[in-house]
Amino acid sequence: MRPVNVNSFRKFPYFSYKLKKALLYFFCCFILCGHAQNKMDSLLAVLKATHLDDTNKVNTLLSIIDNCAEEDILKYSEQAYHLSQKLNFKLGIAKSAGNMAYGYFNQGQIDRALEYFLASLKMLKELNDHKEMASAYNNIGYILKSQGENDRALDYYLEALHLLEKTDNKKWLPFFLDNIGEIYSIKNEFTKALSYHERALKLREGSEGKKGLDASYSYFGVTYHKMGQIEKALEYFHKALEIRQVSGEKHGISNAANNIGALYFKQKKYAEAEKYCKLALETAQEIGFPESVESASKHLSFIYNATGNYKEAFKMHELYKLMSDSILNENTRNSSIKKDLQYQFEKKEEAAKQEAQIKEAVHIEEIKRQKLIYISISGAIALGLVSVLLLFNRKRLKEKNRFQEQLNQQQKEQANAVMETQESERKRIAEDLHDSLGHLLSTVKLNLQTQPVQQTQVDGSLSLLNQASEEIRNITFNLMPRTLEEGGLIPALNELASKITNTGTVKVLLHVHDMEKFVLEKQSQFNIYRIVQEAVNNILKHASATEINIQVLGLDDHITIMIEDDGKGFNPETSKGGRGLKNIVTRSLWLKGNINIDSTPGKGTTITTEFPI
Image (tube, rainbow, N blue to C red; front, side, top):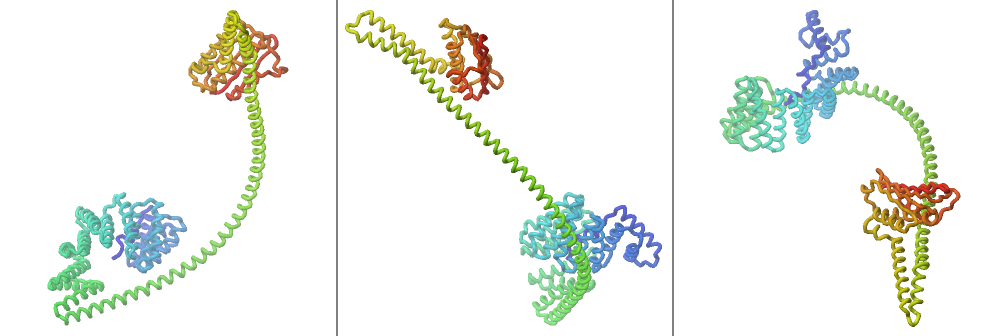
């Protein structure tokens, strides 16, 4: 059997405006050319018209393909295909490619048929024509099935069904469903096969006139036969035969009767088998269909041989051989015709191929020349870019090295400053211990070594020990105030201000703004405290001030500390700065901040430091 709707374009022509114009012209020619005997002659006359434009020629060729003999399909399809390519007429390319595929299929050139079906499908995808795409997928699936590639065929059948279901075309659905069911039957997946055949049957039962029911019954008969359910198979083959006898479709009658006879023969019901095989033979002989005559006579030969009627068995065997030889000769003749057609086509194709090869060679040389120019320009640009990149990279490396050297030097200076600060702290602590606490303890020791010890000496020693204890508290406070450890930065600064104010030498005022929103690490609090402490100690030692103002300001993303005094001031440009100032700078750098010292002789000093949070 042929693929279902394998030549779909022959059944669904494209009636564009230009095609209507061509058809109108065709009817005019039909009236004027009274000698035209049929539609084919009229279409050929239209094709030969000198003033017919190329697009109408394509449409006329497609109409000719719809009406020509099968051996001429390839010839006219080739003309339509090349002309459509020249015009870039996508629908014409798709239709003519599909018809060429059909022509190659008839010649048995399966590879070429697939090639052009795929070319047609590609163009239909560009046109987004779901209905015709579905037909193309179905046709490709049929060809693959004919080659035994059932799994690949199933993929194409399923895609065809998926696309068709997107359209409003219900007419093709039963055929597509039966094709899928047939593949599952071949694969012995009978449950799936029957489900698809049942869907097709329901669609046909619901259609107008219930057309195609005999086809559904035949598919059921074949499937149940493969399943070994002979009675069910017979039931469906009988249903198919009844419909075909009513419609008078003799080819279908012959096939259905032959299937029934073969099944009865398997059941050894020879009388019934003979009855139906005779019906198949007589009907096939009426229509002159050699394949059906061959099959029916073969089955009758088996039946007569099984029942001992050897004379009739021999007679049927002779008929079977005659039909087999006839079919073989017909196939041989068709093969010769096909080979001749193939030879003519290949001659033209070879000439076109040679011309294409020459054009391709010229095109390749032009591409090589353009490529060489492109490579040369690209090479020059690339060389220039590399040079620029090298220069830029060299400059960047120099800048990086210079920055690294500065960073190393800064880190070295910071490290030295930290070590100097630590040494200064040790030295100050040692001096405090030696100058105050050491002297007091030595005096106590001398008092207590005198014999006998007088009460006045004991009282004096106790007084000295009290002073020593006070000195220890002062030294401890300077090292790490307990309030800083337990209460935090602001309470410690308050304690420092109160302690100095209470001495009566200088008044210290502390102002704190918006610091409650910050949570500072211990080390950061310690360094801020030391900055303030060092600044205040410097003022006490060198400024002769009467009042010190300390402001601690919490801003959006940083903290500002300002320490002002009304002392004698100094000139920052000429002053080298002492140990205390260096300690302030070092701790400020540790906090990643900056420091500014503003002082004028006789007008006091302001130290400001800011660091990020």
